[in-house]
Image (cartoon, rainbow over all chains, first blue to last red; front, side, top):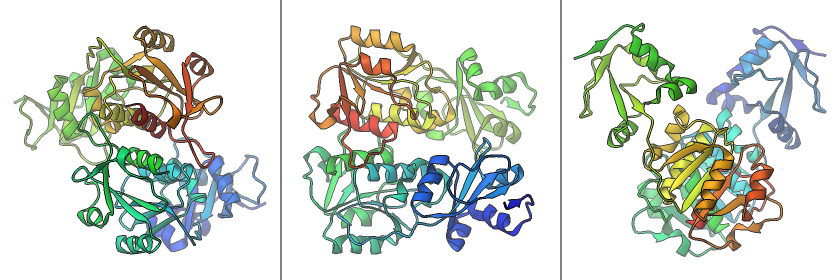
Length: 241
Length: 241
């Protein structure tokens, strides 16, 4: 039974850096804290190391490393004390084919990105694309809001231009949300292959994204207020599901 | 020009307590931190005191109190330094009549409650009811997620039983989300007067809420996953708008 008690241990020092995106990207590792998400990580074959707080029973059917309470605290960003922490390998998504795609252009809030991934999985979409300037998939808040859906649905990060060319190559109809020169969503026809683009929380989609679209739609609203981007995404995904 | 520099000042001590629900309820006051929300508060006649950081220009057309940086920090929970903070009076909602209502039963996450209020306002709903065990409207995260929509749409807190009897009295059809013995949402008829019930993030609606409903509906999903409650709420509200 391996027990680590020193905060100066090299593994702990490395894992402690995984709350920063640059180190997650460097080591291709990220941290998962909730029990049901750790189960998902194990099923998805993404577990690198299971960490268990000393004195706690390992309820998972995999080997683990025990650590002191101080180390668990260092590795977690929860207020309450974790019993388990999983160091996970980034998911190696296989994407051969897709019909229904979500494209997030510069969406910044991890809660929004995670919620959109969760919704996309629920509604049977095949793929979520993030532009390079969108927030990180492996941020704790994104993981939490996604409820682990990214273990089931591929999430890829690429330059906007590359995303558009891949999606067009597959014959997907590109749909943009825009308040001007757009059709009401309820009048928009459902198609077999489509890519729904959603933009930044403050500014919406960029002009280039809107100009690239095959169709522009707006969600019918009674009061001239904007919707949260995860809400708009869900209403569109449900309509075109 | 009034300037407060002491953290021991009685007003500052009182306002400093407003991050706790019990003091907000005791004094009927709450804190608003974002500039556009402060504007909404002024328009809605809810401003009690405008607080401006010393050295910053008061951009609002109302009187203010200047305070030191240390005081601004004490009163705000933002990481970045605020220029303005508004102490606001709780909204005195007038609700004479309503047709379309949202009922949140024990919804706990302030981001979810705020987002649902924002969506309800956008889709022209008349009223949001919170059961007493739902999270507080005047929590910073609720306010932020609502984007100030609660200045426009009434949000009332009451016991579940009282809410149901008021809603029935008005002739609203009570709709519950439930995965069992329920109709698909897309097949559910739109009605003039309705109340949509949504439940706790973990457990969903209580059994008593489901039994009270006139109709039970489920949102069509491809994968057996639950949706975030604010997402489910939005899809229902859009359908029945």
